[in-house]
Image 1: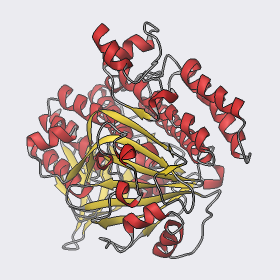
Image 2: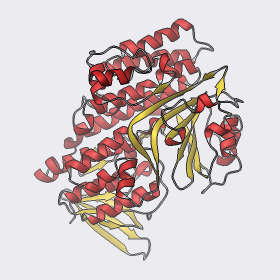
Image 3: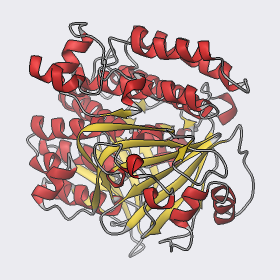
Image 4: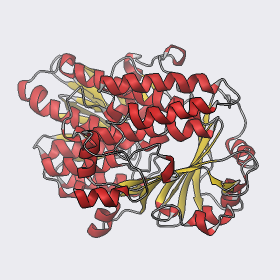
Length: 524
């Protein structure tokens, strides 16, 4: 009899197994496939980096700390291919645009991360986590298909087939964590999928993606001036690049082995579902944007283009008697702002902590134990979906996107700065600050304005001025970097936690010039 059976050895399943094994529980980790394997969700964020480091510290697992940033990975010499992520780079362009600057204006936003995060080649990082979980005592079985799950009053029976030998095997466990993703086994068993037309979220997007080899440099194909190339604090090759246009955006995520993850995410309201072959549609769209086209044309790919339908989904429940789902099994969102890995780690921590302190400790397997877990998961997912829906709508007008895009940053930075990564069960401290009612109310006000502007062909200057004032003043207590200050020319360097404290508490003025952080550092 196992204490916990985990189905799916992706990022969340492996971390959950590792934490539980470290706590001394008998853990079974089942995987239908085999590592290394391809997985999407390759870009980390400050939330993810700080969360995995926190888990490494409180559970005394140095291998998690080693994975917590690009510099940590390199220092530990981990067997993981990755790239440095030091910037969020957003470049907004129009169809036919061939140069980085239009009439002397560079329509881009660059935000530097607090430390050097990483672009993870998931085939390597996921295998690493499985290996560490096994090292700490997890029993791992790959190429094992779960055929049925039978929930009983005193246990759960997992009926499996070994795909290598054809052997039928039954495992007994006290509890199950579902990490099988959008094809969730528990969702299918209990018919939990919410029909997409009944989901109460506006986000409606799809994706086409692959891995390219040795693509071109953005600055070169964009005919960029010397001034443009020197704008950001570090090179754009150390960024997750977002190439945005009305109706969608490309991600460009480089790894150190010459491979670059590239995908285009599309607003279905503008680019409807169709039956065009994936590669054909990808190039049909890409041919409209010469800068992106020049980076990619003539380059080889590592596997055929993958094309999805709508990527948003939801289950009716995320936990039940003797089971809980990781977020990728209960919900589907969108790759914008790379929330997936951070969200996964937060939920894995919540599940493991509840199992350790409530469920297994008290032999209490009632779903009521997970009521707040489920509530938090769905609230975070819903808020993130609304934020990202408005990102798509803001793409229509650069001046709208220019001010709206900072809400994700303000939400994430507030969550981290206020210690959200250390309080897994605090309903007021949720991903992207979704638990702060004041923040959410102000976001909703701005969200409504952006949705209205999406219906307009142009935006009045007084409206743009209002948006700028809203971000800089109405959001001041959340706006640690003085987002929206046009004097920065769209470049936002990292700042210290001391300056964040000062700005959050209103003890220092807003940024007045490019050297403000240097001056404030001297004061601090």
